[in-house]
Length: 102
Image (tube, rainbow, N blue to C red; front, top):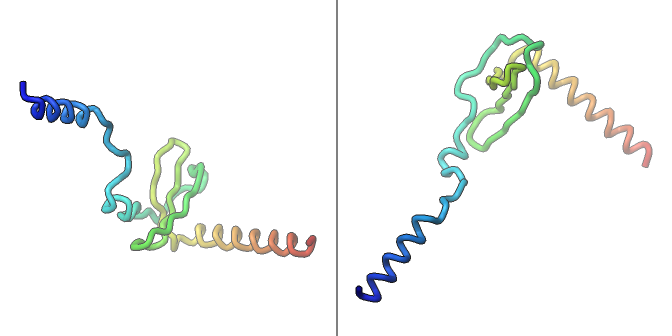
């Protein structure tokens, strides 16, 4: 067997064994997670809320439900707006307390 052919076969065998990268293509990374949103959902069924802001997408709210299903919630939902206002007020109050202590 020719040395060049043997080297090429070895290189191909090694290349096929190397695992591919786990990174997602750019088109998937920049894609909006929420394509449709729910306006009504029981607050009691929500286990966790995630807030996403990606460059080319509007503000996204993802709720993980108690049955481990994830759904997108419309950020304009009235109860969610109240929840966000309360959370912002708590952060502001804690910052004020921390600056007074220093």
